[in-house]
Length: 239
Image (cartoon, rainbow, N blue to C red; front, side, top):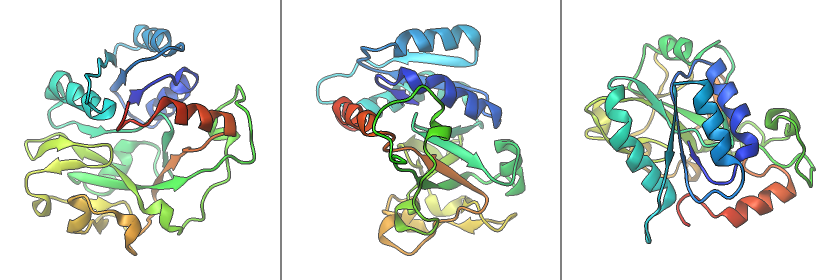
């Protein structure tokens, strides 16, 4: 998870994903001026499975790409054959039919990659930050079959097939040679078309979304004031 000035959301995000079975947490932060760094230090002291990395972004580098490169170099070699997932601080994996991520993966016979569609959430009419859980504050979201929900995030097994990864998918040597599914119609799932494995934009097609088993709740907006703060921070692919 890459973070910049998002201290208010760290503990909820960690607790949510720990509850559904995630067992290692890697947080990479850069250029923080709020309480993000102390909050992450507190979390790491509480749970030895939390790793915190300071990302010194070099001129011309994209913070998110630099963060992924550091995680691949420093942590992922220790996690061979583990399942890995990039989940941003405004994303929450919602399991609808399973108690844990392990249960979902087993229900689909442990494929190499599972890609979960987004469910985009709006502001629910809120203008200001409130000291409450994100998942409680924001409930209004895009209709289930809206094209905006076709974007996906992936969980993937860390094997020799994976040569790199971005925020949405792994980059694999032979994409057509592995089991890569959307989580619907278990136990086989829906085979993800090759063009999306290679990086095509699913929003420009009629593929999905598949939200019956699980979805990524993407709280991309939050309140007006939080959205303005987010725009001020800049995107992960820019400084």
